[in-house]
Image 1 (spheres, rainbow, N blue to C red):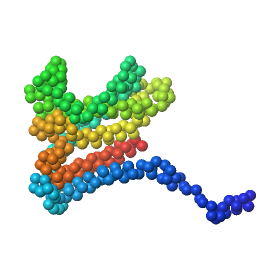
Image 2: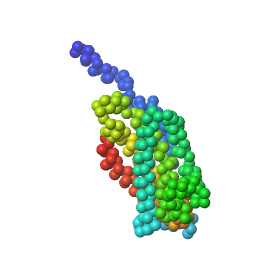
Image 3: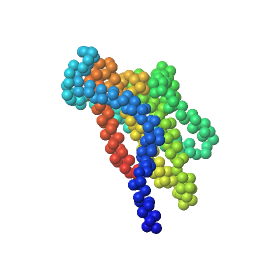
Image 4: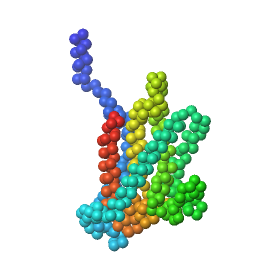
Length: 314
């Protein structure tokens, strides 16, 4: 036994090639090496505009004055942003839009996902039709709802009047009190199916045996959902919530198509404010600073959310 052990121990000293470890094989034989060129190209495409805008945010760069940056101004663009009441008000409206739209979409998404889990007549057809709103470009959805909100014959004012709900004389999109809510409805209509489909897939991954055992023990349907299903799908729920919050916080297209930020500035969100400063007033340096402020704020919100809600889900 000792001789055999000695022979085994002396084999590496004979000069024989040692087999590569698992990490080396993964890099040479796995998909990583083949995906690397695409990853590098994507990083270059995404990083260059970000770095360029970051540099411009510290410059005086206004195309209405000159076709090139006129010099380094330090943090003046950022100081101007935090003293700009129009931008700060736009941030508040953006936050309200994002929080309300995300909350409604997740709540309705959960409800629709629960309904699609039931063995009802026509559920398969409903699942197929549910994907259609998400396949429509947001600008097209905005145009469709703008037509339906038209006070001179739109479907939505007509239905509201039929059930006795008052409609502003200037129209739903023409009133400061209803315009932002109307745009939220457009976003909810388009993206609730996305949340529903993802959450439905997560619910289908819950073990049927666990659910059946809970029912045998006498748990009601709401107890099964609240105590078993919801905790098990919480990681997916957190992910969907983050995706929708990021998307709604960066909303631009449906608001631009439906209201152009009006009436007045009642629907001017942060993305639209950046657009007007950069492409209407040609103040590239200031618009770049606004972009980075929005990016940092979203990153802070996401990390706080993950550090609190995400930690509880683990």
